Length: 284
Image (cartoon, rainbow, N blue to C red; front, side, top):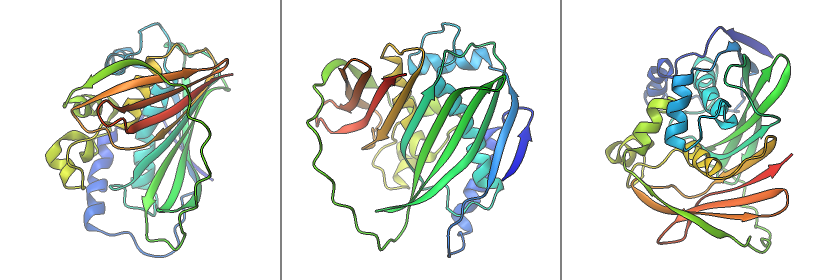
């Protein structure tokens, strides 16, 4: 495992010229292998103004703590540079974010100095291609305070047939907690904060080039919006599956089903009732 150290987060936009090059220069065929590399920001200091802007668009309170998902979003800068600076085997444009898991072991103070690291997880078969993970870890003085697993799908021709899904358990007893009117400019506003300027999120015109009828909301914004709408314990796990695209603008409803130590939640289209995001929060 090779390790690259950074004194600060690399700027996401510096990776975009190489992302665009991927449209011109195709990746070589053959066996797909993920780079054995880890990127580490040795001392990450939270930019409070940036955090406040993030909290505003996602709905978190400015309470002196850092939402764990915010650190996962910051790590996307490392992910972008890992995919463009290393021998990454897939075209970046076209990757589908299908799942995100976050574990927070305690509240993280805004003024704490954090070591943020990111590496590739395993490459696994998927019935629509190949999936892989980014593993992000945040430490304070050697103590792990946050871990995140981000799963992407690269669509590939595959011989693997779709596995027949087992019969699902009875659906949770969801209760509607609110309706959200998601504005058309949400993708552009969130992109300025997150650094994720994927063209499918920016405008209907650019989204159509990738087969979408309109721009779609960032999955990590949708997850953050859900987490900000729930009273989170100090230590928790939050697991989310990204289902169908949330077109912008859109009207959706937010539902929860609470048990003793777990709250399941759902974001679905107000009219069609089709799900955009489904997840669960478990207290630790």
